Structures are given as structure tokens and as C-alpha cells.
Length: 489
Ligand code: BG6
Image 1 (cartoon, helix red, strand yellow):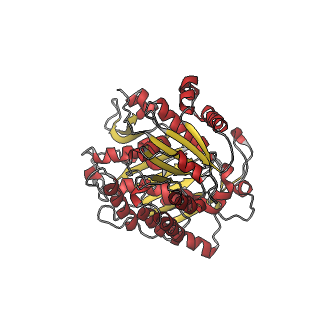
Image 2 (spheres, rainbow, N blue to C red; image 1 turned 120 degrees about the horizontal axis):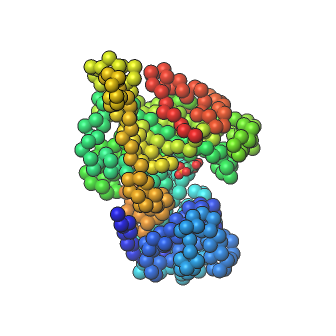
Image 3 (tube, helix red, strand yellow; image 1 turned 90 degrees about the vertical axis):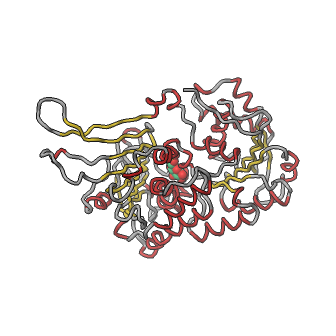
């Protein structure tokens, strides 16, 4: 299979926050990998913009170091790195004042695609958006890319949307949720809408429940200040898990194009039922001796606040009030410092209506498991006869598809979510980006949950680092006669 690289037009991409962590870890290495794949056309430029005064050579040194650190060595060569750095420029720009903007304006070209990546704190969005116009840098064709956190509740998200809308049309705004750029997440849509097989079963008549798990082994790391205010609900559930839920639950869009897809997702978010306090468990990791090389701090140590009531784990049950899903609960969970790094969507089907076999204790439900990471792929568990002369005994076997095995080298050479999304911005394709109304609807659902915690001054349940989360989270399913899928180490 030959890798297909879809060409894009030459562009000027300005990365505000060009010296920041996200640029260093994701944006610049991602762009380098696209350069290596031959996807960045001649005449394109990547311009880092940040407050620090530095020359182009100094910034290129910074970019080179980021690439050495974050791109696998097999993918690096001196020649390509030199070629890539040749298209990198730098502009010292003050996002809070007017310094540097005229110089940036002089750098920009009008005859190529223009994109501005706001890899900065949301408090700076408004100032940057306004100056891009006041200094006549942006055009009606320019695109802006904004990162989460997109607000911390409905009111702040609305205010942010209004700020951006004052300067840019919705068709110019690309709100990144990097989960939508993940290969398997897009495959969800392919599996659902390019096969006839699943659709007849994809509803409450046949699906018993759905589990969405995004388990991480890392703690809050260097982002303690942000995370201490955000917590797992705002950091992961309101956006990433919500998007996954939408892709599973939505109706088929009439076409695979931005507004058709986003309209269907929005309908799902609006149909989400409020979550009762009994249907949600929040947790906070406890410290643990430095076993297996893991950092042993507790959450409160990591955020430097012994009284912190922020959650590093959430598990919840939510229902979708529409014809397709009424009666099929969706169980969502995510947490840091769990036993393994594993993200999975499991569609757990109902039992057969009547078993003709006596061997019922060995019976298991069919489960379609979609693995987002690691080892991206899908497994459908089916019951078959146990081989051999032992009579009609049943056993469960996996129909397993690992992308790496099924697609060979291409399956392992999956572009990072950021690479794909940045190229979509250049292409002008908003399908995998969140629309303003989607973000607001997601906050409208999240707000009562977080407000209830605040009102009750709710204390998260402790769980051990390296465990599967707080005990109470198990009960969420046990009391419904179900069980969580295992999180593997
Ligand atoms: C980010 C969150 O959006 O996603 C982080 O802010 C989280 O807290 C990360 O660790 C997880 O992303 P991934 O791609 O590693 O699953």
C-alpha cells in the first residue's frame, strides 16, 4: 500500500507561543514530520512568534532541539532538518502590547494561505485577534487555530467565542480537540458509516451499554497550576470524552463535510441527560512509594496544595435521550496515574434473547472494542464452539484487527493528531474541529455537575497511584449488574 500524501497550497503559518511547550512538543515536531513526508510545499513558511527578543538563527536552534528531542531518530536526517529550518522564521511580538506587530505585518504574504496558531493562554486570544486586524495582518481568508482550555464553564466559553467572533467569522476559526485528529477516532466514523454490518445493531435494542475509558499513567506533570483549577472533568471529559461519545452516538451525517458532521454531534450533546450526583464518582490519586520508577507524589503534592479538592479521576454514567439510545447507558471514565495507559471504547452488546446451549456459564456478551491507544485497532469478541471432542462447550475468541498488522508499515506510521489537524487547517477543512455551539453545549451539560461539587464542597475519593481508580467507581457498574473492562498495565 502506498502512502497517500494529499498536497496543500503554500502557506504562512504563524505560531503565537512559538517558544512554548506545546509548540516544542507537538506543533513544530509535527510540522517537521509533514515536511519529511513531502507534504509541505515549496514557498511555505513557519513563523514562530513570541515575546522574547531573539534572532532567526536562535529560534531555528530552538526548533532544531525540539525536533531532536521529540522526533524519533529514524525520522531525522541532517539534510531534511536543514531544509526544514530553512522555512522557519521568527518574529518578536508582544501579545499584550503593540510591539513587533508592524514587523510581523511586513513579513506576511497575501498570496498564500495564512494561518495563525494561538498556542497561548486564552486570556491573550482577544488581544491577538484584535491586533491581527488593526495591523492589517489578517485577511478574510486567514484562519486561526485555538487550543483548549476553551473556557472553564459556559459563561467563559461564551465570552471567548464572542471575543473571537468580534474579529473572525466562524468559518475561519479552528478549535482544536486533538482527540479528533487521532487515527482510530476517525476510523470510528469509517467503521460506522462505510460498513453496513454495524448499523442495524447500533442502537438501544442491541447495545447493552457503552464504555469509554481514557486511562493515563502520568500525573499532572509540569501543568500543576492549570490542572489544579481544571480537574479531569474540564480537562478531559467536557472535550475529549465528549467528542468520542458523539462519534459513537451520532446519526449518519448526510455527507462527510464540516457542518453536516458537526450538526449531528451537536444533536447528541443536546440530548445528553443531566447526570445525577449518584451517577458520578470523582477521585484523586494518593502518593505511592516510587515503585517501578514512577513518581511517587500524591495529587495534592503535585499541585502544591494540601487542601486541593480537584479531581484527577472521573467516572460517570450518562443517558442519551433520543430514539436510538434511550435505555443504553454510556459509562465514561478517565484518570491520571492509573494502572496503564489505555484508551478504549467498548460497545457491549446484549445477550442473545434465548440460549439454546446448556453451557451458559461460559457465555459472554459480544463486545466491539475500539482501541485508541496503544496498539490502535479493533477487536470483536464472538462466541464459538470450543474445539475438540468435549461436546458443545462455548468459548470466546477475538476477531482482532491491529492497524499495525493489517496495514503493515502504514499502520505503524500513523501521523500524530496535531500533524493531521494542522494540515487540515491549511486545507481549510473544519470537519475535525469543534464549532462554537458544540463547545457551548458541552459546557452547558458540564456546568451543573461542577457547580454541584462546588456547592457541596465535594471531596474526591482517594485512589492509589497505579490502581484502576477509586473503589466507588466500580460500584457505578456493579449496581447495574455490569463491570468495567480491565485496564491493562
Ligand atoms: C490533554 C490534557 O488535552 O490530553 C492532558 O490536557 C492529557 O491532561 C492529554 O494528558 C492526553 O492526550 P493523549 O493524546 O496523550 O491521550
